Structures are given as structure tokens and as C-alpha cells.
Image (cartoon, rainbow, N blue to C red):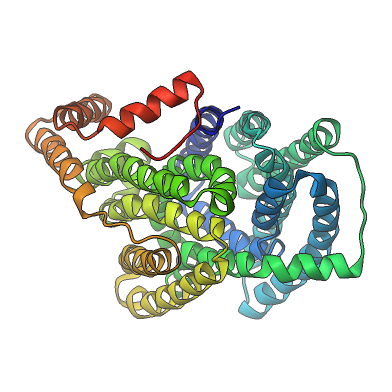
Length: 479
């Protein structure tokens, strides 16, 4: 099947799944914030952040690396999968011991430790499920990926709502995540072995060493990325307490939920970009330019909208107890459109075999974020963490853009900025001068934005031709 049609089909499959799964996930978090006391919600938010940092050390980029390798040579899929599975078991054991020691050394109370252990177990199981996703994605069969994600959230929302409505507390709420992921992991395993590969754990020390050697640049980039992505909640927990973690988490979880959009897109184009790097660099540049344009057009109005509607969003979703989260949401709103572009730049560095450049960028960014948090959180609490998050994303963009321009392609993005900015300004004027119900205001703002985008002829002939190629099942090529 032609590349354009395959990419569009995978985007559609992933899009529907991510829309459903992220939507349900966000509903769960809002429901938990309302039914758990604020301290317990803070404990759970801390456990999520801490576990998502720790679980990266149990993966070290293995899942991402084998997507690229299998996409280039599918005959090696079973060998890559088997080696990765065994290596991840070993790494997971070491990671648990590390978590145990850290929590003991930092003196966290028993309740917090139990929640962290449960959430970590969920995260580890998710990492093994993601190994199955690597098979689906490398074969560009994202429909299986989508099925698993939707099923996971259906099971989780049933279990989570039951435990919360019965008042069982944060420990049983955390346990519902573990039970769900056990079911999902087993189902994903059946799909992998029945549809794609046969069980063949052809393990050797040499192959394990080779896997780790090649995965570590991917893994360290993810480690550094996870540090600056989640370390703020951990630092707030120690410096200011669980109540501020809850206030920050209410705002941060909202913008994180929206990142399914660039995640869908970059996940779908990554295998194709990896192939074109060795076969047709001009087509790769074409895909890169169009991807930048589309992600910016979508991400920019989201940042404007969240900034202007932050008070209505927080009060509608979380209630007056989280009024303090409004300012934090206004600040991290601008993180969104930058993250949309950084998703593309990061995945491009992987596709062009510049994972060491991405690792370096993530490393410097993680250090920058930790230093900012150390300076700002003691004085400004979770608001300081929000400021650090925004400036960290700007810093990451500068580094990513530098590495992409140096090793791949200097793309002058300035001509792409004006029209979406004009459309966002028009949308903003509507929000400022008209006061409606939140959902009516949001829907009308979307319509106004895209109406102006179309009036300004933001989509040119090459965009129209690309759409035609997708519909007619033709090969993507540079116009």
C-alpha cells in the first residue's frame, strides 16, 4: 500500500484510540481528584511521576530502538522481541531494588511507599505491553495498538470508578491500574504471537549486549526526557508537600492529556521517516515540512485557548478546591504548542540515526529543568515548577532545532508562523469579548480559528495534492 495511505490509515486508527483512551484517562484523573481527598490525590500524582521516571530505567530505549530495526528488516522481529523481553525482566528487577532503596532513604511514609510500588508495577507491566506495541508499529499495523489502548481504558474506568465510588481509597484505586494492566499485557502477548511472530526466545549474552549498546542512546534520551517531564512533581512533594503536588497535577495533567495529538502523528510517521532516510531524503524533507506545518497549526490555538479559558476549565473540571491551579494552567498552556513541535523534532532525530544528538539535548534539558526547579520551587512552589516547565520546553526546542538543522535539514519555519498567529488572534478576541458556557465557547473558538485559517489560504497546492494522494492511494513524493 502507498505510504501516504498507510500513514493516514495509521493516524486514523491511532487517533481514534488515543482520543478515546486519553479522554477516559483524563476523566479518571478528574474523578479521582474530586473523590479522593487532596492529600491522597497528591500522593497518587507523586507516585505516577516517580514511577514513570523509574520505569524508563527498565526499558532504556529498547522499545523505540526495535521499532526502527524491525521496520527496516522484519525477518528479525522474533529475535529482537525475545532478546528485549528477557533483558527487560532483568532491568525491571534492578529498577525495583533502586526504588525500594530511594523511598527508604528519603523517609517516605508507608502509605506513599505502597502507592508507589503499585503504580510502579502498573508502569512496568505497561512497559512490557509497549514491547508488543513495538511489534505492531514496526509492521505498521497500528489497529492492534488502538484496540489494546481502548480496551485498557474501558477496563480501567470500570475498576477505577468502582473503587472510588465505594470509597476504598488511594491504595485500591492504584491496585485497579495493576489488575487492568495484567489483563492487557496478556491480551497483547496473544496478539503478538498469533498474528506477527512465533515464540522464539533466541537469547544470548552477545545479543543482549548488542541490544543494550544500541538502545542506550534512545534510552538515555528518554531517561532525561522523563526527568524533566516528571521530576517537578517529585521535587514539589519533598519541598512543599502533597497538597501542592495535587494543585500542580490538576493543571499539568490537563496539558499532558492533550499530547496524544502529536504522539499519534509522530508514531504513525516514524516508521516511514526511518525508511525514507536511507532511500529518499527529499521525500523525508517533504514529510518533515508538512508535519511541522500541521502540528503548529493544531498546537498553537490550543495554547491560546487554554490560556484564556484556564479559570473556566479548572473550576468546571475540578471545582473551587483547585482554584490555585488556574495560574499554573495559564503558564503551562504555552508548553503545549512547543511540545507539539518538539515531538516532531525528537522523532526526526531518531529517524535519521542521530539518537546521540537527541540524548545530548535531553540531557542538557534535564539538567536545566532540575536547576530551575531548585531555584523556583522553594520560593514560588508549584507556580515555580510551572514556570520551569515552560522555559525548559523553550530550551529543548532550541537544542532540537540546532541538531536537526546540523545533521539533517535547515528548515526556515518563520513563513509558517504568521497565518496561524492571525487566526489565533481572531479566536482570542472572540473569547475575550464574548462570555458563554465553556463548551460552547470552546466549540465556537475552534470554528472561528479554522475558518480564518481557510480564509487566509494557509493550505497551499502541495497540501491539497497530498490530500489527493492519500485519497487516491498514491505514493508520497515531494511537490
